[in-house]
Length: 127
Image (tube, rainbow, N blue to C red):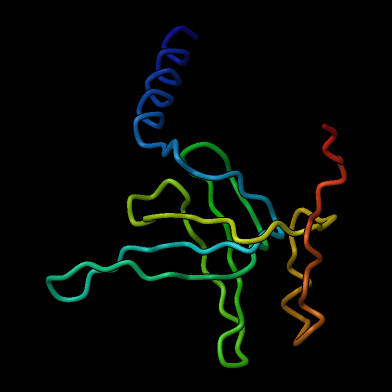
């Protein structure tokens, strides 16, 4: 039992070293822009992928998000490992108001049917 606890502590310490701390809070339904580092030849550049988060999986160092966008009438989905060194940045452009954990039903919809309502703060600021 003692060896098991030590192994878990070692795994947690290794994962903590690889976790990013500057990530925004991401939810399913959010419109995000993910900057991905790409190597072409000897050069490295950052390519932006903008779309809607339709799924989130796992936790900790293994957290992934699935982002979907429509490009020239064709749906494109990419799965990003959030804490990967290949991910340069993640920006939340717009918060979405959804009532599901997975938005796979968007795959069957086209055009305006794929829109998601924007989340608004219901708390009014008082002076």
